[in-house]
Image (cartoon, rainbow, N blue to C red; front, top):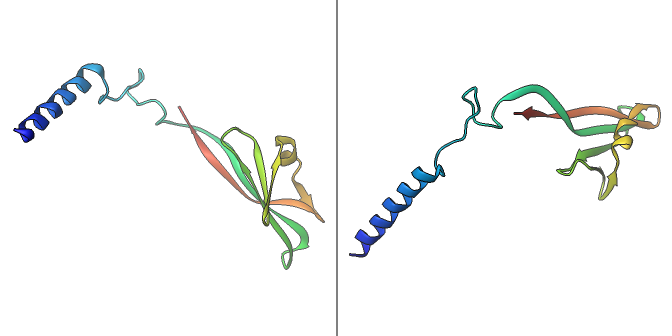
Amino acid sequence: AAARELEEKEKEKAAGEGESGGGAMDVDSSGFEPGTRLTGFYELHAVLTHKGRSADSGHYVAWVRNKDDSWTEFDDHQPNPKKLDDILALKGGGDHHMGYLLMYKAQYI
């Protein structure tokens, strides 16, 4: 009897999802589910920099964009909050941070 009740509840749940659209995917006018199509645009997500005069010496630092669009500099054990202007100032050369590896994230519509 318990198995039959469980089976009936599952059928009711499945029927309810079909009526409310809970199990169906939303699609836009072109037939695609929103958020699944690439735009061809990319957003800078992280930067790895090198500070030093040669490849044989120097220091590497990671700069990562957070979900709220703020940035964090990871320099050894100390994470430091940074602003977009700090990231844009990473020109490099000599004793300054030089962009070594840039990571991008695809944008979807």
